[in-house]
Length: 236
Image (cartoon, rainbow, N blue to C red):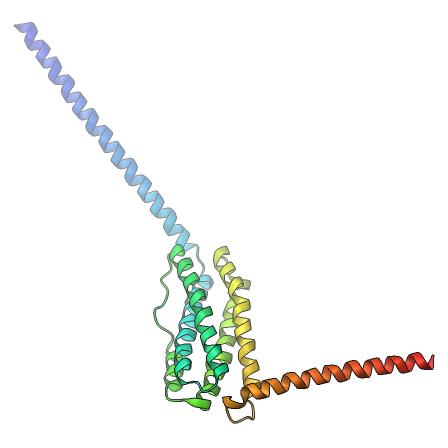
């Protein structure tokens, strides 16, 4: 009987040890899990913190630029008189929508929350545009959203490519810079066509005339050059 009691006591002790050991293992696993989670969270937070103020500035400014061009482009499709201006507006919508989507993907990966509205100045310019129509609208839209806005945006892209520290953000700026530059050059060409014409209705005609003038100048220059060369050869 005494032996049986000792055996039972030993079994009880073993069970307690197993229970305590199992609890310790589970506790250790939870502790390791928490440590790993904290370490991963720390790494993620550290990665976000490494994004410089310049990189963040670029993302914010580029996001507002995209929204501004898309919104003003939609207004131009409704109010512009010139088909050329409407084609320009549609290209702004298409290009900046694509650029905006790419920027959103990058910002999400970097843990950056982009603005959901344009700046106060952009809103004021938009309000002014919405009071206009026809040729007056064409001139104001190309000057504000085409020329001025893209000059400002181009500076932001150039600033990021030269001062940015995050490789992916700099690459995004480098990819978008020639697109912004092309938009600016298109707007400036359209502005030259509008100068002293009284509106966008004469823009295409003036642009064609300018192209013809350039063609004639090149033709005259080539002709004069060939003539002079032939004269020199004859004199020899």
